[in-house]
Image 1: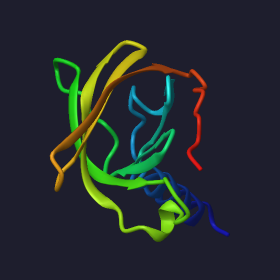
Image 2: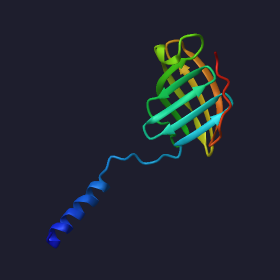
Image 3: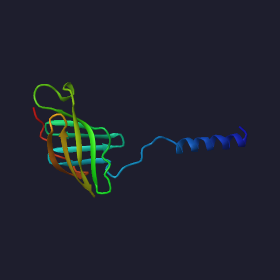
Image 4: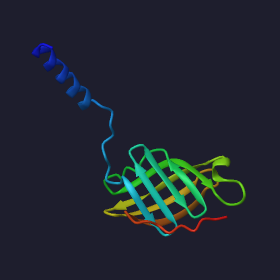
Length: 133
């Protein structure tokens, strides 16, 4: 292969890698745990698990200049003989604040105007959950 073509291919590969659609990491990415709650945050959103419920955040929490965030998502109850995945998820709002390695998290079930929390979570802490039967 002639050298000019090699240089062109190398430049095209570098440009393609530089233009990838990768999402930049966020300071809230990772595992957050607390009493009766665990939050797993990744570039595409987050999942939350409580003793007797689970949820999904539509986007990862993005704290503003004051450390506050507010994200829509879903919430599914895990009580009784019907598994959470067989129940219709409820519209929810996850909100709170982040200060260093500490997060305060509350969830409101939109249709019921019912709020749980605040829960205090710490970055990297494995929670103790007591799952409902």
